[in-house]
Length: 168
Image (tube, rainbow, N blue to C red; front, side, top):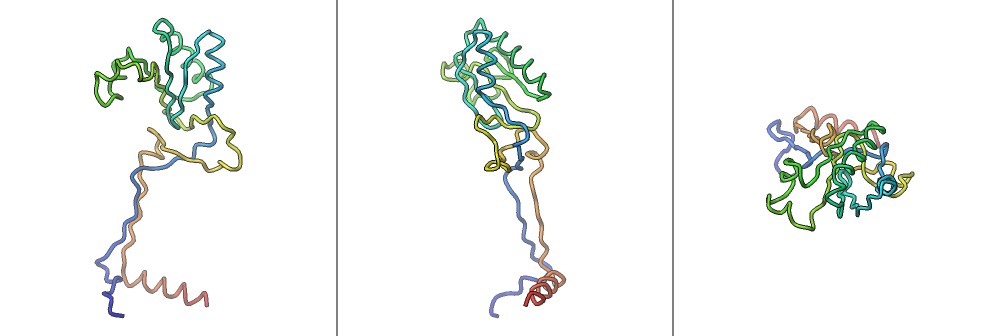
């Protein structure tokens, strides 16, 4: 009773997040499928999954263009939009904290970024992960951040009071 009235019409509560979220379970891309496809063409990279990106390491310089083309063909056949970047691409440097880092041996030879819906996830997405979500990359669900604004006024106070009084 000694607390100030919060339903004064001048107070708002805002709830938001630092990014959106996307449920991505409908499209699940396994690194093992990519490895199997590349292995047929005698390309054997190491692949690290990053939810919305795949990082391919140890691709021989002479195989880079072939690997990019095979990956693009793979994703095109599945109607999945991706951006595929190799160290030799100008845009690749924009993903490095420092441009000179793109020439260090420990950075990926190729980066595959998901543009459309989906995740890179190599485990079965069953009932346990039915609502598995992740950063949505460039998807609409990621770019539009949730925002809820609650104006604390007399009308809201009455609605809450009436609702909870009806529960008893």
